[in-house]
Length: 282
Length: 295
Image (cartoon, rainbow over all chains, first blue to last red; front, side, top):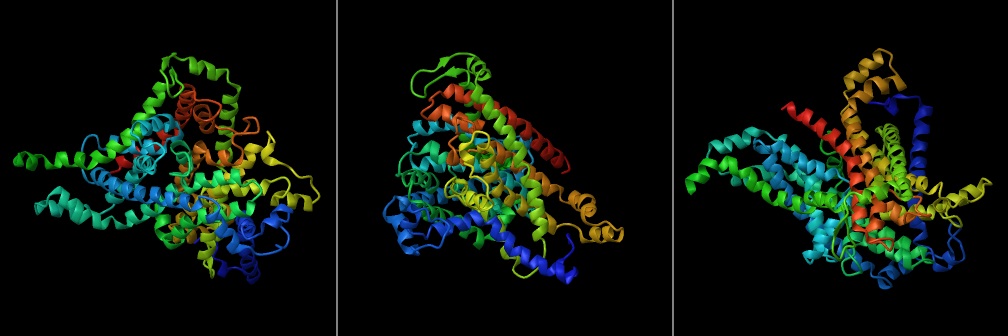
């Protein structure tokens, strides 16, 4: 264990550490705390420039309901779910298949296909914007939830394939060989032998992809217009443009936008971290 | 028919499993890369006819002051974003203890990475706000004049990068925390017996064992720096006067904003960004290839 475990140090160091911990975390999260505090201030405070003094009143319920009644924020949230959930399912399904193919079979082009997925996943995706917008327009998917879903599934398949393939490589190969000797078909091996073992990888990827897609802003900007299909990230930005003197409301909106991925992280922390570290660092 | 399948099942199966993934990935990622490269030789407003103009877009790039500002900013992003790696390492070392409630502290420290960059951007714009922002309230408290960081040509990019370092440091911290878990305790004990302490221990015993974590941290940080777009769009929209643009943002402006609808020119910028990225992708693939040969 490095650095030296704190319980083996001098009592004064131990005390210092226990004081330093909460202080550092408060400083680290100061920008967020500021937003949380602003989100319960009244419009009067904001207009009179009282950002940091004592709030004249606590408007928690007023502000958080106003965000839903006075703006399409509810729609945006709904759109975000409509985009995120199908993407998670689609990317997991596709990458289970590709990961299985690349992880289990030895064929000539295996490594080439694998590298294609990895390389594609690492590009700065902005370079795809003109062709992808064109493609979406010609498929009639521009400015629709499904246009975003289709692109996100395709792009995330790169990363997910990388993850799934490495995960499957680490499984005991004897299981598959034993099934083959028994004459079990390849599809049944996939479905009955490998898929049940892939559950941890699927869980890790689901949480991760959920967060990535929920937080996507660029593709929402490129592939949508208006409130019909806009997710919360792009929606929040347009609200910020409209509500110049209403920082308390934009703050409340920001907190709401941040909640789903934060909850996801806290509930599925172990899986989330397994995904982020690419399963490579154990 | 049946016997053909039976004889060739092992050869055909991988391609059947791969088909849907390859189809989607080619349609939305691989082909568009080549379409972008092709488009960079054309003049096109996105609606009418495309006109072939050879390398004129690239020649124009060489004369475009804003292109070079964006390129320079990309380099600044790359260099400063790397700071997230040592910062994350020290945060991880600070938190790598087993005191009560440490798990909560670790999770809270990780918080900034989970929330959207749009929220991070908004939060930091307010933080920097010259009249009411927390930063200037504090500065005034110490007797300094307020600075409008995002409105100053010289500071805007740095202000945005600082905002970007917040989540990125959190990401690197998690990578190192996980890495520290697998550091071999016997080697540390051996190091202690040999009287290695503090920095020496970190440099000679711990860091070599954290190599896989460092590799991933470098990969995701470099990619994060080259993909930077959201924060710029939210915090300054490339301004003031184009001084905080990066290539990814500039090409978006050229293609889709009121500045442009110049798809070919935008594609030429994309090719430059891709060329920079290919160096890193090449290195990553080389390393993967080396690892694979071990099989």
